[in-house]
Image 1 (cartoon, rainbow, N blue to C red):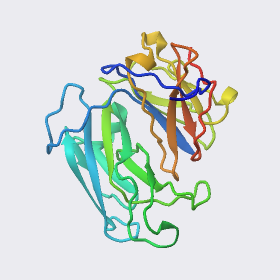
Image 2 (cartoon, helix red, strand yellow; image 1 turned 135 degrees about the vertical axis):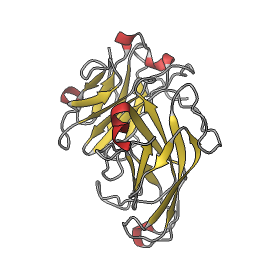
Image 3 (cartoon, rainbow, N blue to C red; image 1 turned 90 degrees about the vertical axis):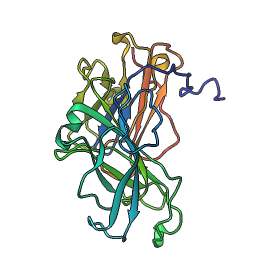
Image 4 (cartoon, helix red, strand yellow; image 1 turned 90 degrees about the horizontal axis):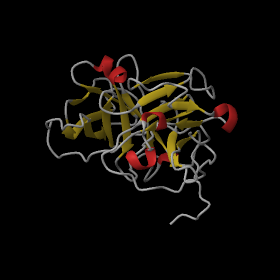
Length: 279
């Protein structure tokens, strides 16, 4: 159990709530989401009522180069019409939902996670032996892709190389889930752009708090929608920029029952920032 003064003390969510959100800083990113359902072990399974499309993604490293021939990417345990798109390379895995990948980012949010607790690709120098990694999500004009970089401490900040590892991904449609993608135009700039579920407003439901709390700190406030994030769902966050080993972290504020916030980290750290309140 966490100490009484820990600002990141968690509360048990109620299964069935919904709400997820993503934010991106050019130096890292964050995302927040609701209850995830377990993947069903079936090929192209029927889509359950939650309408989440998801898959485990297997990545075979063919060589240590960064070309489309360097990796073989396939799916398993698929829910819905989750596909691999052509053009994947080292640490960048192209995916799509259905026939048209170009509308995926406008219609839903992709969350990703590494599924291997370390992987040895038989490389040398700083990449010798078991290497741990971080996956992110990145929308683009051609569709979503999944960037992966090493999380090892053998590189300077921003210098972690791309890495091949198995991952999982789930696409949450904005029509069924409270979700969004916030981004800026320059490193360390405020998150001034937003794509997300109808009714979610930048500055109201997603608040960039960098001016008062520091770069990379934001607030998610769904109380005007009648949602207590701590009790009505699960908030999940994801790094959302193809740059080094950026990742995101969400925390619930125990001092304010109706408040929840998430922390966004530019470098790997165990510290959780407090005083991010949503009213």
